Amino acid sequence: MPPLLTLENVRAGYGPIEVLHGVSLEVEEKEIVTVIGANGAGKTTMLLAISRLVRAREGTIRFAGRDVSALPPHELVRAGICHAPEGRKVFPRLTVRENLDMGAFTRADKAGVAADLERVFALFPILKERQKQPGGTLSGGEQQMLAVGRALMGRPRLLLLDEPSLGLAPMVVATIFGVIRRLNESGIAVLLVEQNARMALRMAHRGYVIETGSIVMSDAAERLLADPRVRAAYLGE
Ligand SMILES: Nc1ncnc2c1ncn2[C@@H]1O[C@H](COP(=O)(O)OP(=O)(O)OP(=O)(O)O)[C@@H](O)[C@H]1O
Ligand SMILES: [Mg+2]
Image 1 (cartoon, helix red, strand yellow):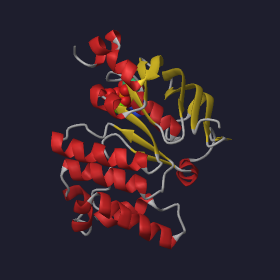
Image 2 (cartoon, rainbow, N blue to C red):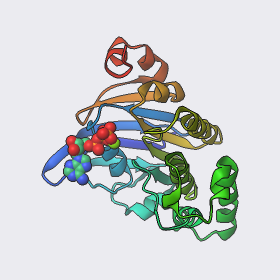
Image 3 (cartoon, rainbow, N blue to C red):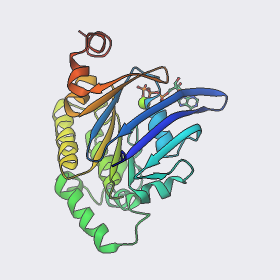
């Protein structure tokens, strides 16, 4: 079986500035993979390149056995890659329900969408309570739940999560990470970008370390957790 997602020598950036200098990475079916790195290392850019919101100028991205390097973003969602972006990007004036509906805009299977909505409400009951309220009125933690819920409405095979814990209280982080684990146990692969390296590595099967646009280490998450260089640079030890 080929990996679910493969990046091969991906170069991407903004205008004349190259941010990713040839990134290669794999996510296997049903795996949680984390990418850790400092501010500005290129983590968000990498996820944007996978979602095709930033163009890869070189390299190949394969998903589920096909080359998706040139697909438009909505086709990637249809293929099963759904992205909960950095900063959540909730539509503030749309209601919670409308935000969730936006996550399903590529789908025509009404019954499946309705079932997935119920699943999201079961995972995050607060979203059901708040469904008629504008997204912008939610708390930070609720907005993060909404961003994950919206991504789930695309029925992902691979979920891209960009800093889901950022700025949230420990209780909310525990809720969100608990849901991520359950989603993974239900068969969804996860590519998790986090500055909270310890939490991310505890949750993940494998990890990569990115420094200024290049992957410098990759290993089983537990080995990265024990690695002296990782401990010194990313775990504050
Ligand atoms: N839209 C943009 N235009 C120009 N440069 C950008 C843009 N977005 C990001 N960059 C630059 O690209 C580099 C990588 O940014 P990126 O957001 O991918 O890093 P990151 O690893 O996600 O950082 P953080 O941990 O702070 O979220 C940074 O130097 C940043 O300034
Ligand atoms: Mg980022």
